[in-house]
Length: 420
Image (cartoon, rainbow, N blue to C red; front, side, top):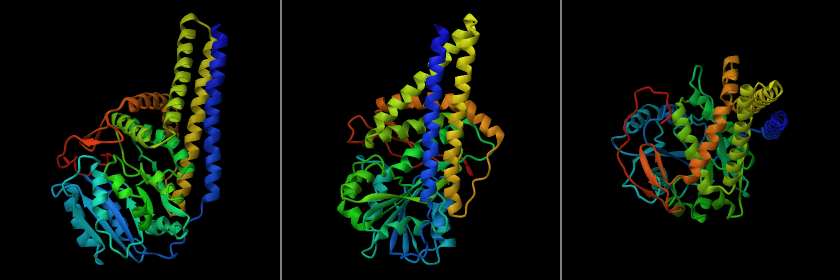
């Protein structure tokens, strides 16, 4: 009986991994057909770039310098810094004095924040108040994104099509070598999320552009005043205007930060919590996570039983299935990574080759990632309070939110490459 159970369970987990790989390969082929870079010389309407910062992300300086050095004719940057005592305030003013001869960068201190939304959403609504009448497009940039010189042109170019209401990029986590398990766990989880985010053009506010007229007519400004995340409401608001969201193939931006395993665990839970609050497909993610974990744990349980009772056939069946499914999952990750590398090539950036040691480490981490995915899915279902950049938010009355505390950001160690 154990032998038959082992063979059946092994076949199911192998088939599941094969489906995952097939989806990744299909995604890679789909992306290859979309790899057209927006002409950086296309019409460049007046654009406002909005950035909100709390604390100094490891790439904050590169991000701010990069956006100041855009090959774009008409743009302004509205940077909202959380507090005058925030470490980003001094950094921003230093960069402005050195890299902003055209006075494009406007630095604002965040006003007293509302307690009905996140600090980031509050900062965005504050920045919108400073937009000029001449502004046609509004772009959003996260401080952990270092934009290349044609980033803004590639982001706003598709908005020349009146049927497109928003343009989005996406994010890839490529931790440097060497890096700990936490950074790789986050990268593996995000690799799977990337596929469906790009497929369905789910907005990512780290690199996103919208027409100012759409921003105003969609009532997004009022929505953000009662929202916990900035990109969560974007898709519905834009589609309700009869417009579509376009994915920009050259804007899968590379994040090279490090993080611990505990941070990755909290990060995945927070991302899934945002998904629960704003995405219709969230419960499909939960079902997928639970199914994957049941499959994996069943195979490991049978493997242990086979060792205990000395059933060699069941042992070989389970061990082979787990090894092959892990290899297929690692292959699927590599396919997604190749997509991110192609996106980087479109803008003249390279990701570099991965090492045999990293591939081996990824293979070993597949079961860990599955467990974190499952546990985080359950926690996100039960989550009623989130801690985000030292601020706690009450989600128990969602879609209404309440900020529970506030204090200026407590600085991390200097020159840290850790995510904050």
